[in-house]
Length: 419
Image 1 (tube, rainbow, N blue to C red):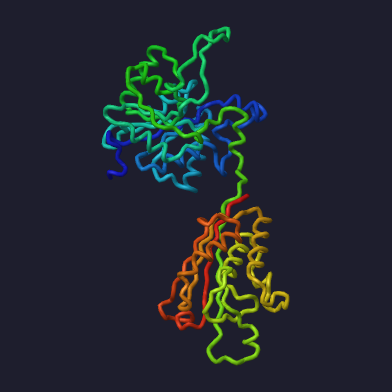
Image 2: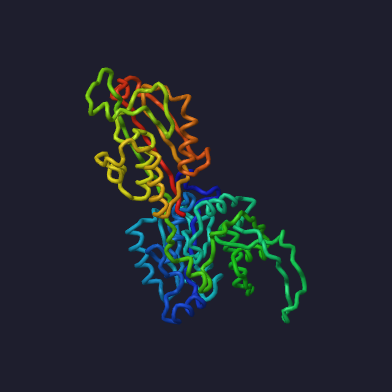
């Protein structure tokens, strides 16, 4: 067994509890005929499978026991087999029946862990399937907190509300110090031997607890608390069902643009070409002493690349389709007009630019003295702060079209967010 897969005290498995009745959720889903909450659909699979996948991505976890209601065990074993075949967990798993109470289901899950020999389980995570949004990072924090002097570790969140203790008449008897309080989550991690012993005592002496950490506390073991996660919520009430709905938030987009223009060649006399020779504009500013650019508009290769990047985010075609060089209306047109129209279309598509990175490729002219002004002008066009636009310049070391000083290229990458 490799170090990456070996817990310091021996192999670690996880027990995933999916044996609850979910009566409050069932009432909201048309009563007894409704599916149990652990079987509700989330991302095209049952709710419990989300946690199973997360646990499987943590290297320390060597195997998984899934605990279901006794009447569902056979059907769920078949379903887990199908799910695992379609998207393998990559680790061994077992299915067992749960009990009437949560602590009974945990005890039965522990009994299903491998025992004896080098593969014997030495530590265990206990997780509620009703917390499908747990992260692998949180699982690792719990595992890393376990050790010879730390037989139990649980995630907890600081309490932000004022908490008051009340009597049976709902009269306040005490205001608790919230600085010492934590809202506890799962997964909870334990060394297996002391946890099993605590469960045996609980069964023999009739203990009633709400989680396994409570058993360990009652048995006299210290329980460490690691930072929990706000998103690690438990699906408990009908209002929580909204968390299982597909999120409609649009994703960020990236647009890429490229353009190239040739220079007026020395001694070129064609009247048609001379009619399209423009003083160099780059990034919206004039570049004095630069070669003339052959173009239908003002020939600003950098703003043309930027226009295409913006249109790409909006899925609105390209600069040639919107502003064809066969249309006399665009002759010698300032390229800032193209950028402004592309930006309008981007916003109409529900996006806003947040960053632009642009590169000019040219052997001549030298652009170092002009880059800051170009970046500032482009930031103004995009209505962005100066620090959100970057302009770079490079050469092709004397190679190819630009290296031979016959033209200029530009590339633009724009990042946009919904809204």
